Length: 284
Length: 328
Ligand SMILES: Nc1ncnc2c1ncn2[C@@H]1O[C@H](COP(=O)(O)OP(=O)(O)O)[C@@H](O)[C@H]1O
Ligand SMILES: [Mg+2]
Image 1 (cartoon, rainbow over the protein chains, first blue to last red):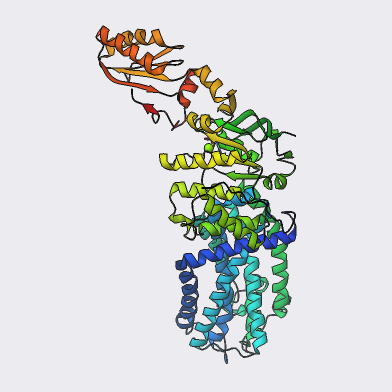
Image 2 (image 1 turned 120 degrees about the vertical axis):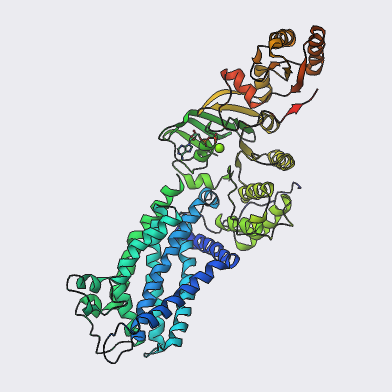
């Protein structure tokens, strides 16, 4: 242990810890840390990738025969958009659990004592979780193709569908991240997010055509953002049929725009809420 | 501006406890202040307030001239903190941990990387530098955490119980590192449960209990108030305890404490501990008092507490009470 302090002090590339640029650069540094963890604990990745495969196979073969969306459309085709939407929404639970875990780790004290952006831990976590979603979408798409799903519109449209799914997942990540900061316990997160996610995904058009719901639930189904994402995917992938009419509701007529509105709305509400909650939670 | 840390009337209350009950602290530039107290005294609370991790209910604090409440970012840019529990990411290697901290200080990749390598070298972690830190020993993890606090070469360093839980060898190593640091002129606030540690590292010591300062001074001043070394004898027959008390009273500086439950008698002596111990043993032997154990030891936090407050420190492991025994 020698005494050789470096002659020059730290070089600051940007001055303040509160600028939006710092939020992005610091968020990127934290995201890189999370990605390193994916590499070091690959078991997590296995589960992230196995569950979408299971979803596709389960729905394709267990319910595939039981639910008939209507003449001329194979249930698997109808289904895949719904499974994509459901899986990315469920995947957001990871963000909540990951943040809850972060908050219990000693490293959070280091982060808090640095002149870094206050939102970096959140930006980092939600960013690195995009990687999980990209991977699970890729795996699901491959599994889907194997069981008979087909993209019937152009490649660009399909890419737009995936981009929309990722955007929506990113927004939901912030919601779950907020819950993760509110109740920093991984078990509670898993149960709490179940309470939110189950109704959202099952009372939607993801697995059952809208007109099969009774008139009491139907408005919820039509205005449910999960339905909009699902509908948008079906249209962009070309997995639609005259046998499954699009409801008249504005949300279902403009599913892409409606989804984007939700994404923006969620971010406007939950980014500041989460940043505030991070401050409260980390100073307990 | 020569006080690097200045805290006035810090109060922090929790539901059932008052962690800080009006604490004042002053650390002049380039000096080391030891905050000495048992478990639960409020050391960590004070540290967290100064490091902007916690807001006080009352009181003000300035670090390097920057108000902790008004400009926490400014304070963070000027301090290095190594908390009671190592703040390192267990999945990252030592190098990755330090590089990440550098990047979060706003350093370029090259600067952060070079700084990380230099710190690994300085803290004897070169070999382990590319292993995930969860494979590190407790001492290595503390050193890595301390290195993390030094990444930006802050003018003020805050260390919360840097050696608690370390084995004696790692503790010695940590002490060497810290002495090295302060010789560079860094201002240091150090909390500890060990009088010996404060004595070794600090210029000035504040003893705290129940969130307030109960004594302040240099190690020597505190020692002269609490007496120097301790002579302790344990008698075989509790009926002879009073004889032992009388024998120790002859050489004692201040009161002699008897503990019938342990059949022990303790007295502080001002100087010439070994010589006085011999005289005590001679007297007891002449008197025919049979002894089970004899010791000469340096004063501990317990002794300081006993002298200052008349009671034993309450913390669950008010450490150091038995570790520094020197057999005679
Ligand atoms: N978050 C908290 N909630 C409730 N009580 C707390 C909290 N943090 C500390 N305390 C209490 O405040 C007192 C001081 O704690 P602390 O500053 O950690 O002491 P030390 O670091 O000297 O051991 C203790 O009685 C402790 O139980
Ligand atoms: Mg403590």
